[in-house]
Image: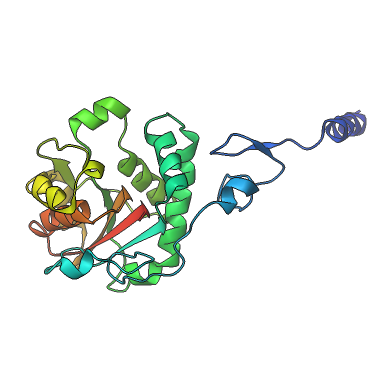
Length: 250
C-alpha cells in the first residue's frame, strides 16, 4: 500500500513539475535559487552590485573616498559594506523600509552575513567580537515603520554568527532624515543625538573578561559615516572598545 502511495505521489509530482520557489524581491518563481544563501531568482541575483574590492580601507568604499580624508580623529576603527548603494539597491531598501516587503528582511541579513564573512579576519583581528549592536531610530521613525531595520539586520546577523546582539545606544532626540542633508548639516544635526543604553553597556562590561571590547555597529546604509562615528563616540565614552561598522550598503 505504501509503495503504491509513493508511486502516486511521484507521478503527481512529475505531472505538476517540481515546486517553485518565490524570489524575495520580485516574487517570481524559480526552480532553484541563484545562490544557496540568497532567496533570489537568477535575474535579481545578477543585479546585486557586491563590493568585492575596497578602495578606502577605513570606510570600505569601492571608490576613492572624499569623506575619510577630512575626518581628523576617527573613532570608528573601520567599516565595511555588502553592496554599492546604486539606484536598484535604493529601490530594494525602499521596498523593505517603506513598502512592507518583509521577505527582504532575511535576504538583507544574508547579504550582510556575506560581507561579514568576507571581512571576518579584519573584524576579529584584535580578538573575537563581543557583541553586535545597531543604530537606534527615533520614536517618530519607529512609529512610521513599526520596526527598526538596523535592529532587524543585527538580529539576523546574530542568528547566523552566534554573536550576541546588545542594544548599546538610544536616541536622545529626533533628527530629520539624514539622506536629505549635506555633509556639514549631518555633522551638526547628529551632535548629541545618541546616548548610551546603560543596561546594555553594563552587560558587556560585566561579561567581557578582557579589554578593549570588540563591538560591531550595524546599520542599513553608510553615506558620509556621520551616524556611525557619532555612535562609536558615544560607546567609547562609556567603554574601552574597538568599535567597527558593518552596513548593508555604501
